[in-house]
Length: 239
Image 1 (cartoon, helix red, strand yellow):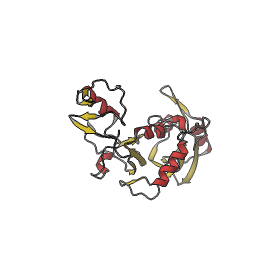
Image 2 (cartoon, rainbow, N blue to C red):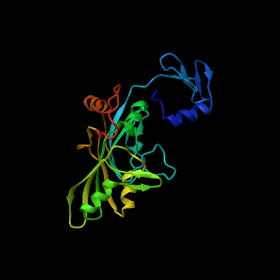
Image 3 (tube, helix red, strand yellow):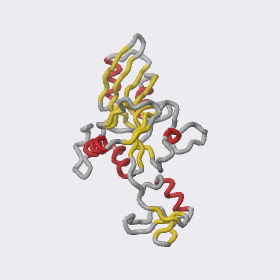
Image 4 (tube, rainbow, N blue to C red):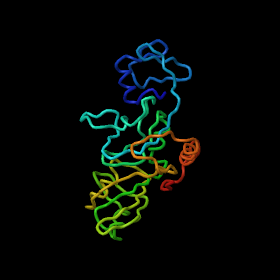
């Protein structure tokens, strides 16, 4: 319904603050039809919230969470106060930066992050060495780490300096700290990691630390890439 996150909703239900058609429920898995059932929180009725889709250029040093036990700055500190609840679509770790989507449309968010959709995520990665053919081949082969196979869809050199290089790495899946773990296993250090696109959506010239609404053309393009309400493409077809 776009009121809060799934974990927050479950906590509200278990604390007996949620009623459906006048009856308090305590099981978060209780089925509800938002079109017909009356849902109340602490006695106040809620309805399905208007869908919100935001694009953020996440700065380095900001964590992708609603609250942080260490008191670190979160992405929510960058949101304008007039916005209701939204949740991040996937995550960028504290040291990473770039394109981050936020929405209160949890079904849409799940489609964006679902590896089965093979939606491309493109990153520009500044590494601490010259990228030769051997390094590129090793990245392309992938590595096994903690029981997971970490692979990339593609990798290429963007530019090279005297002592380091910028790579473009494309993923069609997104395991936790995927690129960092892969490169660490190859003893390659990361100086910067910036996500520059998700499917057809480009970070563009959005200033660091700022947020804007996803426009209708961008939303339509993402929906088309996800092939919503159509059969999925063959596995491995990154788009």
